[in-house]
Amino acid sequence: MSKRKQKRKQAKSVEGRLRLWGAHVDGFRNWLHRKGYQPTTIVEVVRLLACWTEWLQAARFAFDTILAAFDASAPVFKSSRTKRAPRGAAALFIRYLREQGALPPLPKPPSATETWPILAAFRSWMRSQRGVTDSTLDTYQTSLVDLLKILGDDPRAFTAQAVRDFVLDPRARSARSRQPAWSRSSCRGDRLRHGQDHRSIDSDGLSGERDSQSP
Image (cartoon, rainbow, N blue to C red):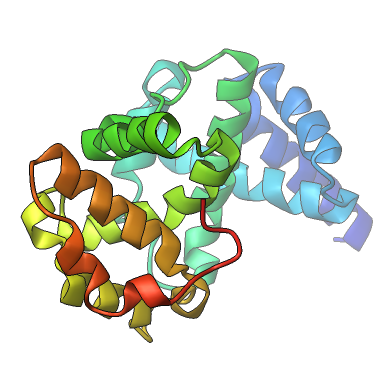
């Protein structure tokens, strides 16, 4: 069999396996093109999707159970990068279907202030008591969320030593760039709201480390 005939047969095989998705296949190709995928890569992604679709149908899943199929396929398409590739193509296809409204969108994750009410209270305190803008608070927030993940939301855990250890933690990628201004303000705000004296956080030396961006 010539290479040209072999390619035609392979193309027909791919299209046959993808018939389940109907017009979404062409839409998926166009979507990949708009996302910047090269033509050869698009062909490969579609071929991999056909491989995953073949498994989906053999496992008796259908269009309306594609999300369950994706979860169920995890143990099948694992191990090496090559073996995971068909499921990766399926993930792209599901993302496309969500964007087109053919599948329900992913539930919106809670915001940082919804996850950490103490963070919302801190932002409110900083605005009302210190006049800090939202843009500055947004800059602080990434590191504050990291802090809350480690120390939790109990203000009693926000000791001078705990905050210092967090700021100086060499394992954190941005530890060296974290600014003591926000940690000082955070601890002070929490302690004031809970009727605690904030002088203990000043006495450890953080108060002497001034930063040009501190409010």
